[in-house]
Image 1 (tube, one colour):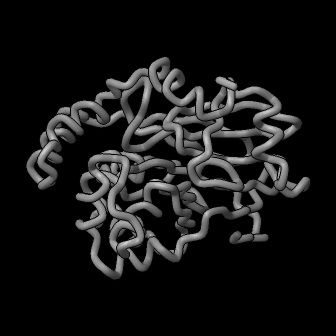
Image 2 (image 1 turned 90 degrees about the horizontal axis):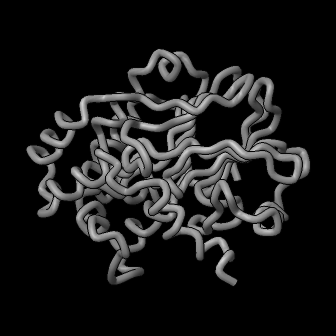
Length: 257
């Protein structure tokens, strides 16, 4: 885990960019993101149509960016290094092969969690899915006992936990801790737009509107993935509803048992 003691007044949290450069560019142009002390990426940065371009756009921002790995980033690295033969997400192999060897090494070195001190919130723990696992499922309506399981090892001094993974924004109080999910920049479920969060001194869920039809046209022109037209139409327009996503993810948080 990366721990930074210096207090940040404002932190912009971007999760689940999934290699969608037009959505990322729209968020990075937001005045509150430009002015933020830190930008935290809570994983699944690259698994999508423009992985290399997204990595370089973010690396151009320098040390202001705190990078965390998500399960999809890990899968791309494992695929490129021959650790796995396939990736569950159909666009995954394309994205893995679109990365340079140096970018793969960069992603492989990313931490899974980090802690920052944020003004008004104290110590904040950032992760992808849960603090203990990069693909575990917790949802806004997960049972208290489920939250107790996944947060059991978290330092008591941490009063806010920020996660991603499920692509749906929410803020919830759980066993005395605030849990925040900023939603997805590049693959939103429920409503279109690039979703993110601003921390300090409170928690503010944001959504950045951008020209989705133009972004779809750009991806079709610039991305060689064979099914890019269908992929972009599905995810950039948020054809997956929040109800459908919650229904699909629900069994993964233990509620079916």
